[in-house]
Image (tube, rainbow, N blue to C red; front, side, top):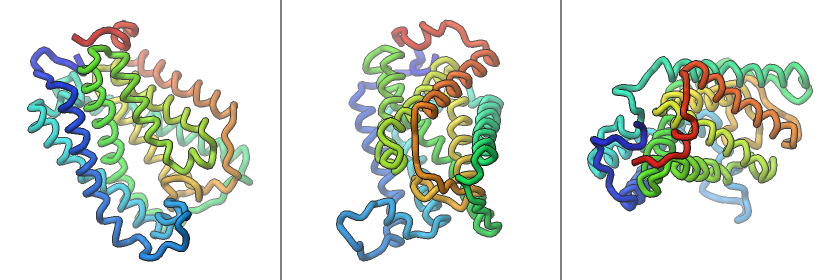
Length: 300
């Protein structure tokens, strides 16, 4: 079973704390290439950090942000293989190898939904958008995104819904606590994103419900595959299709949202319907059962 296998000799939770610090260190090292491109002088001590980042050309900025996740990959190998003495598959899937068909299905399903949402928004309220497509810049963006976005999203899934979920599960010996803590930590880490400051604290609900959707899929499906495809599709489609001046990933995408940033009850309700629908589709396709046991039972 995912989170624990009788053949695994899981170490105490403090090893997971140490492992997390090691992964943070590798991430910080990966951010060093960004420093030479930051402005040497800051106009005001109160300047928004996002404005500082936006002083870097968008494609270069995206590359520098995403490249830090590449540095985390050897950190994951070091922590899992050397610190914990476990196979990498122990935090990836209960299957003998990753099920690429599951990743592909999840990716295509969420890519289609994201595309329909963006296109529908444009057709319903075209005044809220402007066409931002510039062939050369978009081509560079596409190459950067297609290679680095899957690495970024995979690293996040492996760390939070693989490594940390296993750590919390080992600590509390309970699948619900593993789900709740790993997904809550992931969701609230996005509180520093500019979208939250622009749209209000309620927007953190979007990150939380998306995080729990992926977390539930991991426990019900006994592996990260569906979450890997879902997360990659989400970030890749948004980066390529839609941007705005106030998002964390302000890119050379096809469309640009020029409307005043708002987020209300209708948006929350839409999100509350779409994410459960995704889980229902997964459940039907992969014949999920024993929901209570898989989501709330003790692990050992």
